[in-house]
Amino acid sequence: MEGTLEVLNQLEAEGVISRYAIGGAVGAIFYMEPFLTYDLDVFVFLPQTAGGLLTLSPIYEALKQRGFDAEGECVQIKGMPVQFLPAYNPLLEEALEQARDESYADTRARVLRPEHLAAIMVQTGRDKDRQRFTTFMEEAPLDAAYLQEVLTRHQLTTRFNAWKPTS
Picture 1 (tube, rainbow, N blue to C red):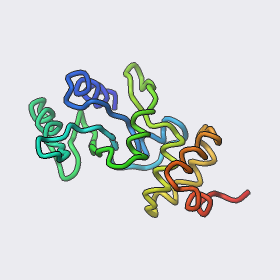
Picture 2: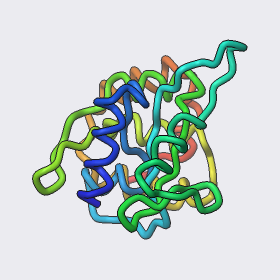
Picture 3: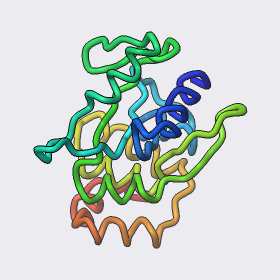
Picture 4: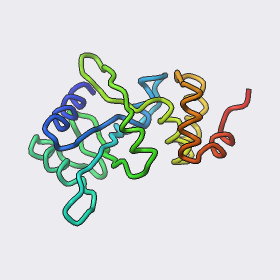
């Protein structure tokens, strides 16, 4: 994964992406025991086209020039499938803005805060998110007050309370 992170950092330094952060199951491993996952979810801010649309094309073109090809919804970067996901709603925008710089081996990696990872699981609402949620809530180092602020701000408190493990 270190080589993949180096490529992501280069894309950011070159302005191909303005900011990135790791989310999903790989983002969660920075805070707890790993989950089985297929790919690396990378949230990005994308430049708008002249018509106001968001497009992943500049990322895919820059990666293709480096010899990395798209396979389905992912790009294989140094042996790791990477899925680029635009920050398409206020929660994801906030999460990306407030992501933390962490280290993976000797390489910088920007990772979503655990509170945002939990809120995104709740917002997304997929079965696999719900299955992972309880373990994440038990193991990840969460700031409970900050998590409550995020949930309230993004109107996720009711769903969170329905998902929350009972003690």
